[in-house]
Length: 262
Length: 251
Image (cartoon, rainbow over all chains, first blue to last red; front, top):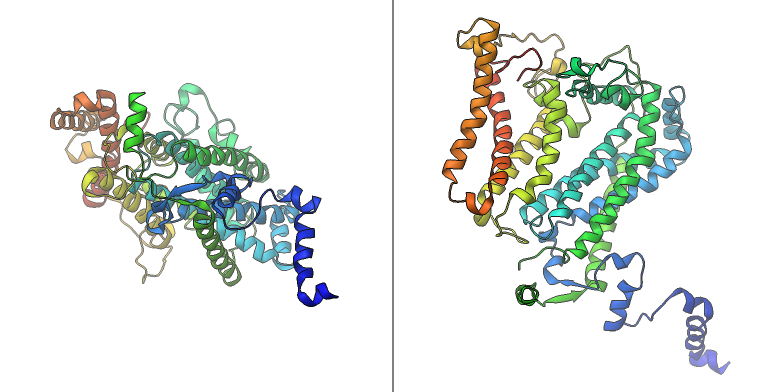
């Protein structure tokens, strides 16, 4: 009773919790604001240890970074989370795809919101990745020793566009089908490898067997193309882009952290 | 060893701060603001869903996704093998080559215009004009038949546009096929050869430091980019369709 009256019970309780085996095994350091804990907070956390423990002061200035790389990554994470939810309800089959979209929009709780967030995050990602690249160019951050990371970045811009493009087909409505038709029609003009491209006659490609038909699994944007784009969109490109992101972030650290005046 | 020591002296200033909390709190705030904006945007504006896909019903205009409309607009001026395949490949390769072609050591890690004027002009022209402006034009000003419509104009699918384009050799009075092919080849080849020669002459002092291959790739990529603009001007201003017609490809 005395303990409750004096309030001592709270500190006793806190001590019992923070010194318990469960707590000690979960949290590897204290939370008191000491230089040591500030370092440990980053270095001993699997999610935060992507950061260095200390950075130059100018790297905090939003005028310098525009925050665009981070926002691009955030938008990617949003599309991953909402995309997994959408995959529960969507079947990439010619007969079902469009009706699954209708079902998702009108019958699934928060289905419309999930779809909207997925689409707008994807469009935002395209814009922010361009702006990130623009910022990196304007600050000359691609110069030595960061040349290689710029190359990885160009791959990532390309994969961002390909992710968005393959996802564009999946609603299986007029907008998506014809946009992808316009886009993939270009492949048949590929030099040597497309049946309408220059020098195709020397290779012997045909409308049913050229660069475009490999992409579409047929000679027009039909159900096989839908399945192909679905697999590319949900599995192949995210995996490749994810791997490249790991390299991209890792190289920032290895190349001496964020760029700055020497 | 001596180099490593020197690097340390020249290295970034020692004015460092802890990432926790100074950077992490910024990232956290930024993420929260972005998520709020995205959520409100997603509640207010619905993603489009048109009628079911129908391969027998082609919409007019048929547009690629908005981020590719710059390339689709280039299709007016170039055949698909260039606008749809070679140009995007060159954009990707050219972007990747930037750090290896730009050997100017200045302007590394800070904003400067004065120390790298040409680089900034080239990138801004390519990005803001040839990429962004063409996208805006493609989204808002291209109507049925891919014709140009001002924002206040009705998108008339029956708009009549006179097609009076001729090939460049024809405009110069050349009427036979083979002569036209040779003339076109000379014009296109001459553009690249002369352009490169002028560049190498003007920058002859840099040759020793920068290297032949670097300068060669740089000027070729630049000439291709400028060539796209030249072709647009030729088409819009002088009704020129192709500069060079061959049995295999046209430019």
